[in-house]
Amino acid sequence: MESMPKHRIAYVLGSASLLNGGVTTAAAAFGRASKAQGAGELAAFAMEDERSARDAGLWDGIPITFCRTRSLGVMRYCPELRAALEEFRPELIHTHGLWLHPMYAAYRHTSRQGIPAVISPQGMLDGWAISQSRWKKAMMGWAFQRRQLERARVMHALTPAEVAGFRAYGLHGLAAIVPNGVRIPTEPSDAAGVVKQAMVARGCDKTLLFFGRLHPKKGLRELIEGWARAKAAFHEGDGWGLAIVGWGDPVYEAEIKALAESSGQGRSIAFFGPIFDAEKDRTIAGCDAFILPSFSEGLPVAVLEAWARARPVVMTRFCYLPEGFASRAALEIEPESASVQEGLASLFAMSSTDRTAMGANGRALVEQRFSEEVVGRMMADVYTWALGGGAAPGFVERY
Image (cartoon, rainbow, N blue to C red; front, side, top):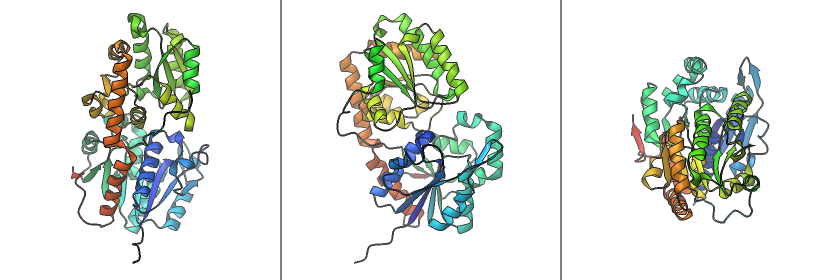
């Protein structure tokens, strides 16, 4: 008996490398998981950047077309993408992210070919996110983005809260609520990473890790101010160090480094720049707790990765992971320095046994709800339905 032919599914992103941060990490996980579930013949298409070739391994053999870019004022566009999509002849296009030229190319192709589109905004329709670079997003919305969103066969929401963001933007349609997923480590990290070694050298035997893009929405100013206040007020914080791993706009990065230096706690705060690949895993495995004091997220992969390594988490409700608070896998803070101080005081006061138990709760949560296997089955069901394969899955709702 012959097997059924596989549908061709194209993933379209602004960048398919780790320079795209959590968007690429999440998209690659969906690609790997969907491929493992036999969802179809997958291929990815993105603008080329300096890490494109190096990070291709994230996609586990899914072919990627990196399109050269050109500049038009402050915008980048990739004229090769249209021809690349025509050559692949996708039957469905899944875009990850908004406001960039590749999304326009995907919109043109789905419109002209009459094929379904799945769109993952990855938190980019959140009210806080929309308020940033408002003029650019208004221009892109007028040019194509709103029409692309309105034409989608289904919007992919990471959380129910993201569906509310779709409504607030004025959209109406169908939403598939599928969370991000991560790989679950099966073995302990093989060695102490450079971050842990550096923190020990600074006299810090316990490390609180921030891992992500250095951007105002991440609450880094509030983190540093709250850290300085907590360290000064609570002797339980003695021996704790704050490791900040990531990259961002050089001007903003210089500002927060200057803030750390002037905080009176500069010795306990270290910046490490971007870290990738196996060293990233060693960095997460080597920390004693993880923090994300964000104003705005979709559903942060970094938190899931910390939980997968059984690390306790301190985060805001704007990470949209209420399960973490309910299951005692995380401490809740607001993105303000006084709340960060209170959250850190609670963390510092916890015993190692309590921190271990909190991390174990996070690991169990990932295994139950946020593993690649779980989300891969869900996304494969979305593709099957969107391509005309029967009734909508139960997690697809009208909004």
